[in-house]
Image (cartoon, rainbow, N blue to C red; front, side, top):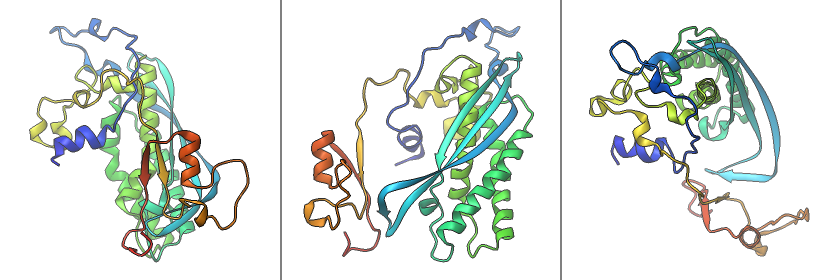
Amino acid sequence: MNRRDLLRYGLVGTSLLHGAMKQDFESREDTSGRIARNSGHVRILEVKHSFEDYKYRVPYQFGGRSVDRVTLLNVTVRVASARGKEASGFGSMPLGNLWSFPSQVVSYDQSLDAMKRLAARIQPLLSEYRKHSHPIDIHWELEPAYHQLASQVSSEMRLAEPIPALCTLVTASPFDAAVHDAFGKVNSINCYLGYGPAFMTNDLSHYIGEEFRGEYLDQYVLSAPKDSVFLYHSVGASDPISDLEVHDRLNDGLPETLAEWIEKDAITHLKIKLNGADLKAE
């Protein structure tokens, strides 16, 4: 798979939901008759973050490791447009430290604490970003600083392994999502309709190479929502498939085996988690 295919199928996913554009940006033209692209750019006014903890109904196992809880990082960002209009956006992401910070020497609690500390450093960094810019450019410019903050946290905590780059980006992702959400709201559009030349200063070559010269992200997302998408049921490596694998039933009224889930929800698509190199477990 080349980078163009990765962009089309990996970056934008199977389906992106779009809303109708409510504002006529074509009426905002500069003296040369071109659309004033920067008119939709935003400036950060305020950033807040918080955490939510949840306990799983049963442990979930993948990659040879089990987890029975999750912590959500929730972010709210308030922005202003060049015309002074303000809007707030929201982003949320599970702090998946088990998969974004896999380690044999850093404990679950340590890696989770590292992500929380990193989030607390990213918040003021993003809050202090004062340029009017497109959301993609905001985080493109700030990403090197995110990794520097991760190195600082790793050193201060004296972690046996430093925070991985993937873990850093996972921690930053709800901040990014909140900015995109606010960007869409302040411009009265679905944010996915703001990734073309009418809004963006740079084409894709600025970020991922000359082969994308003259192309924009809107060429790789759907222009209209799909009526429906398949629901995938995730099967953990320790999830019971049949009654023979259930040792102690919860008896809480919900299915307890894959067969029961398939019957209850009419499941047609599965996502199967494996235990990595443990062939016996597979």
